[in-house]
Length: 461
Image 1 (tube, one colour):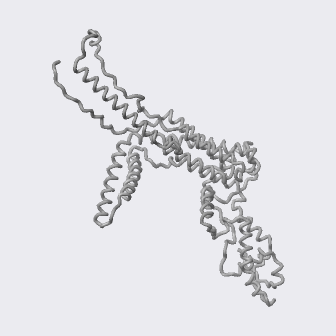
Image 2 (cartoon, one colour):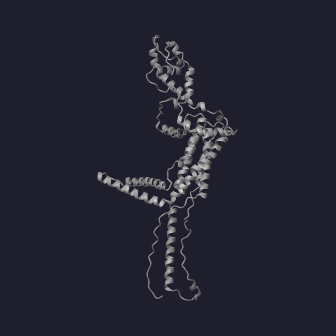
Image 3 (tube, rainbow, N blue to C red):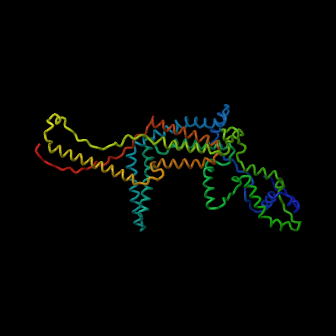
């Protein structure tokens, strides 16, 4: 940092300076600083992580392919090679093994959850703490979830099919590093995570009316820097007037603070930390309705396509096919003896046949009554409930589609051009794996058979 150069500055010369520079000079004379005087350093970890993705993007773009086609082509290439053979395919094979181990996993998790629940209740009784029914139910659900995940990972690890493996997060990691590479090429100073969190922070600040306080200049735009300095100049006006009222008050300042070019250089560095890595072609090689890939899509077409892509996956893939299909009807037919048909039709039926037919009618009537009660209970439900026919997983994905539309409205266009084809290829991989390597039906314990009261009658044969 350059050393401070002493100089004498009179009141008349000081008041001729612009307000922003006067406030900067006054702030430099105070014992504290309200912002950093230099732009933040680049992250070495980020530079190392994005070296490979950036080289691949540059290689495809160097073939003469514009960015609006090079970015989706990179996403498809990465997802079809590394993402499939090292991520999706091994994960599906491990899921098949864990499905066969589900009875053992469920039994072990159930036993350990019951033991942990019993220990917790005993400790509460010894300590004399009162336990409510709601607290017990919440604690029981938490134990079940924890031990289901822990036992699935522990038992699956013995059979080389752990629940958590490095390959399980491979596709998400690829998405993050390629998004960071595109972000750096766009000249943005914020990562993907901070972009995702920003809409929620602004929403919370609008409700709480609390101003966001920043300690460094790394998150300030040029307009914010100018506004901050103007506010500091307004707040320090009275102190400056008292200091230079006599006309003889002098202050030792740095000579570079008197140069306006120095302040504009600081604002330019604070605006874009990665401005040196900005690729000018990213600003002109976009799609027809969004030529600049470094800014969000003002037409909201790409965010809508991202949301629609997630919704297509919700309605087209309902999981692996189930081997057990519920029968359309549960009517029991009375067995007919073939030898009885050859007999005279006018012969009276035997008592055993009458009892069998009567019991069969009772069972069919019970089935019909149960089906009628089930239909009546469904009809009594509210018909205006939103998403009533969807499963819990489908509801979560529908809400995620709406959330990604909101988040995608603030993301650069280049990031959306990578995310959309990546999600589409991932859905195609899932459909292909459902056909090539389907997940078998989970083994469930047998249910108790229906018990019917049988009247024992003894008669002549």
